[in-house]
Length: 376
Image (cartoon, rainbow, N blue to C red; front, side):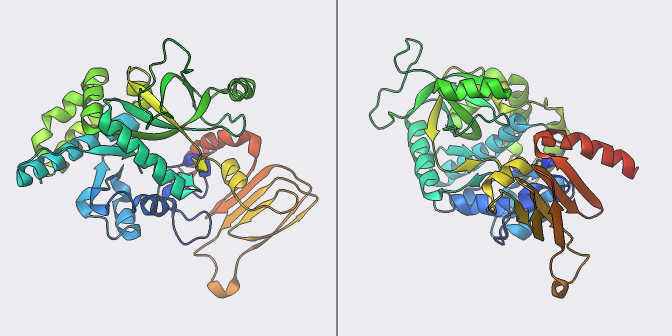
């Protein structure tokens, strides 16, 4: 899923080039490139579908040149994650049907859904968990989500409460192989700090990673049962998926889908929803604060990225300056002096300089709206 604009990473992330296409860590690889690379040992590139806004199609072709062009699914309008997943599901159904015709056999598909802007530190463990998830959904008619074991009371993530094994309402999978898989009791929205502390102390809550694994059959049935209005739209174009008529169909009908997340539209309503607890160094990298947490820091907890910075009597700050196109390589990076401030975001890109307290970074979306009005 690569259609978001990452507004909380403004001014680096913009409508023209959102965060999934940026290299935040100076590795030479953008977040979406790192995501595709992460799956390569498990999923062949011809089975990778990227759902994005049509405006980003050329950037994807540039950054992932070996991805088949037809595997870029372009949304004509942003409709959140449920229609995005429904579109990909419809295309996968067409791919499966094509293979069945060629091989004259029974083909199916197991699917992993991943945002394009997450950071995974332990990729070997990540692949092990995803493979276990594939094995689980192949043998069970269920929807599986990956839940991250919380390391702190985080207010920026949603939470998953897993059933306790001893609870009568908890139907765990009766298989030694999948002993870690647990039925989901309920999903919780992003909490305030005190509630987040309670979740962590309770021990039966996990961070909602937004990573899902299911079989083609399971997600098709879930869409039909819980989002019939979305399922019916794609049913109209079932025979057009993967053909020259697909684009015209999507242009006309996709905007008719409701703006709804897969969490709210399906996962919170479905009965056979399970969670696989995992710990592979995950972050959704949604904010400057999360980037600060994951970056290398000096002795006072300061971070400087894309610039040279000197800190005096300053603690817990993140400074990021992106002035590409304004200076030559010989001139080097800008030099920044930060004195007497704590826990601040200082970020510059193009004609915008942002100075904001980290604790107030959720307001950045409002700053973006004001900036758009200013440009008018």
